[in-house]
Length: 554
Image (tube, rainbow, N blue to C red; front, side, top):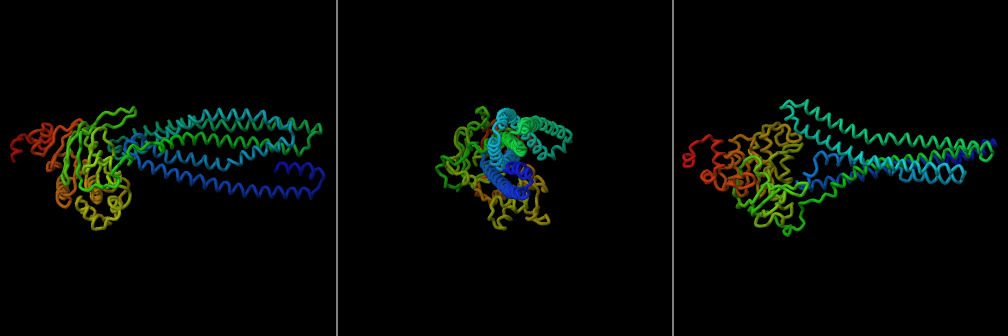
C-alpha cells in the first residue's frame, strides 16, 4: 500500500497544495511502516528460533542414530564425513530454513500484492512485467539445475578435507616422530586447494545470479519509465501513478530476486539434505529384531564357537572370509589365550562375542544361547572389552573409570584399579583419582593408559573379559601381577587374552593358534610345544631356546 499512498500524496496533496491531506496520508504511511517493523522483527525472531530448534533436533537425532550404528555401518562412512554431516551440512539446512521462513510469505506476498496493484493502476504498462517474469524464471531454473551437482561435489570435497585434518591431528605424534610435517602440510594444501576450486565453481553460480537479476530489474524499470513517460506527456497518466508503478515493478523483481536466492540456497541445502538422509536412512544391520531372549542376561560366561566363519562386507556385497570354521569352547572362569601373526583374525574372532559384527556362518553361543538371541544391551553388559586401541576421554581418571559402572562405590573403583595394577601410579598424581587427563588419554603413558582401560572394564563386573593385546605396553613384571589378580579375585570371569608374547598366555587353560583365519593349533602350552610347529617356532624366537625337549621336561 505504501507506493499507492505515495501516489495519492503526489497526485492530490502536492498538486492541490493540500497540507492536511498530505499529513493525513503521511500518517497512514507511518502506521503501515510501524506494522512492517513489528511484523519483520517477529518474523525474523520466529524464523531464527524455528530453524535453530529444528536443526538442533535433527543434529541430536543423527548423533543418536550414529551411536546405534554397528561397526559395519560406521565403516561405510568415513569419520570426517560423519563430522561434516553433523556440522556443516546441518548448518546449510539451518541457513536455508532461516532465510526461507523469513521470506516464505514475505516474497510471494510482495510479488502477488505488487502485481495486483500494478494491474489495477495501469493494465497496458503492467504487460511489460509479463514479458520479463518468464525470462527470469527460466534463468533461475537453469541456474538451479547447474548449482545442485556443484554444491554436492563441494560438500564431498569438504568431507575429504575434514578427514585429512582429523587424521593429521590424531596422528600428530607419528607425524613429528617421522619428521613428516612438510608432507602433511603439502597434503593438506592439496585438499584445501581442491575444496577452494570446488567452492569457487559452485559459488560462481551465486555470483552470476545477482547481475542477471539487477540487469532485468534495471531494463524493466527503464522500459516502464520510457513508456510511462510517454503516457504522462500524452496526459493519460498522473505523475504519482508512474512513481508508484515504478516502485511496484521494483517490488515484483525484488521478490523474485529474494525467491531466487532462497531457491539457490535450497539447492545447496538439498545437496546437504541428501547426505543427511543417507545417515538417517541407513539400515542398522545389528539390532534386537528377532531376538527371542531379550530379557536374558549373561550369567555364567560360557562361550562356544560352532563352525564359525566370518568376512567383512564389501561394497559389492561379496566378502573375503577372514575366519574359517572356528570351533572351540571356553568354560566359565577359564582363561583362553589367542596367539597368531598379524592379520590372522584374532581381533575379528573376539569381536563376534559382543556382536560388534555378526558371523557369516555358524554360531557363537554364550551360556548356550546364540548371541543374536540376546538383546544387545544385556549381551554387552555381560562382556568387558579392552580394545587393541585404548581410548580414554577428556575428564578425570575417576570419570573415565566410571564408564564401567556409574554407580560404583569408591572402594570398588580402588579394587578395580588395584587388579589392573593402576592404583600405584594413580596415587602418585597430585589429585589422584581426580587428576585430569586430556582427550584420548593425553597426559598418561601407553602402559598407564592400558591399565586404566583394564580397570574400567573390570569395574563393569563382566562375566566375560576380552583383552585384545591390551598389555603390550606394560612391562613383564606388571603384566604378571595383572594375570595373578585375574587368577585370584577375578577367577570367576571367563577371560580371552590376545597377545603377541607367549609369556602372556602360556598359563592359559586353552591356547588357540591362528593363521590366516584358521585354528592351526589348540591346547595348553605344553601340548602345543609338542604338537604345533608354528607355536614352537614363536616360542623359540621369543625365548631363544634351542633345546625344546629340555624346556618341556622342565
